[in-house]
Length: 170
Image (cartoon, rainbow, N blue to C red):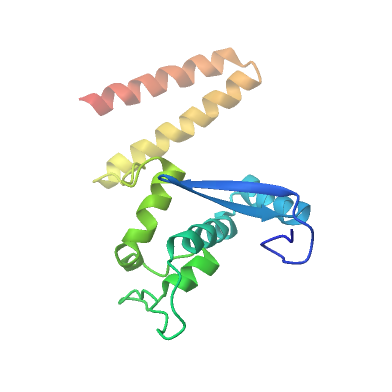
């Protein structure tokens, strides 16, 4: 069997993607599998998502008759099509999340375990943002001090972090 990614080498790896009850398999050669592993390791999710979307959309799209033209979903805001997103792995704008909601929801659920954003939100005031930055910097300095076994400096930094945390609670 040929690799489904490059379509030249013999496939020797199988990747399975579960979508609810349906399972899709992709067959890859050693080179394409190495590229996929490299994309995962370096955080280059663009190509990985494109491959996953291609696998998912190939199983979810029903076979169409040759008489009917294929209709592609288009984001009204940036004019990105679902097929463009499937190939590139990139959305064009925030409106794409709404336009491709049906296709994205199961994929995000599968990848992240949820579809609601759960990251940090920006703080309301500039002073609060400065305080968070100061706490993060003190934490980094504390880690460095502990790593080089400078416990006196680490104790001072720990106390400063506690004082900042107490100020935050007030």
